[in-house]
Structure formats: C-alpha cells, structure tokens
Image 1 (cartoon, helix red, strand yellow):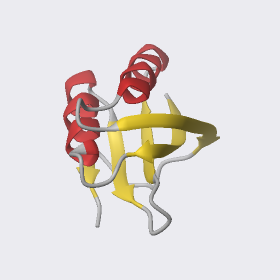
Image 2 (tube, rainbow, N blue to C red):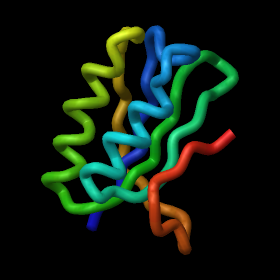
Image 3 (cartoon, rainbow, N blue to C red):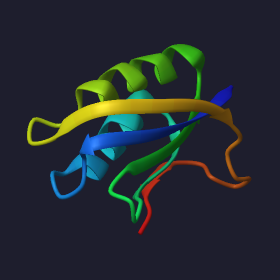
Length: 90
C-alpha cells in the first residue's frame, strides 16, 4: 500500500471540494484526509492500493462541477499511524 500527498490549486475552497474528495476516496476504499490550507489550496493525504490511488488522482484532477483544478502537486508520503478511513479535517 502506498501513500500520496496532493496539493491542489485552483478554485477549490468553498465549492464542495473536500466533500467531493471524501466521497471519492471512500468509494475507492482509500484512507487518509482532506483539508483546506490557509493559502487557498486543498491538501489531501491518501493511502491504499496503487490502482485506487491512480483512479482517485484522475478524479481529483477533474474536481467537483463548481470548482476548477489548475494544478495538482503529488509527492510520496506516509500516512499517520492509526488512520483507518478517509475524513475531512478542519
């Protein structure tokens, strides 16, 4: 199982992006979290099977209908111990 950190830039706050990411991740069986950053980006840390993560990233690049994704910066990372599901953090 691998983990990825995504930093998403565009119109991604105030458009339901975190709920979109949570719903998508849970549907794919991924764990991790999504949260808004003070600089206007959204951060996602997610872990799971390679194929599910690749599908998740493809859907994140599309984003919700009300938003617009301009850039997704992706890096390898590790998930905090004890995280067993995908959640929205504040």
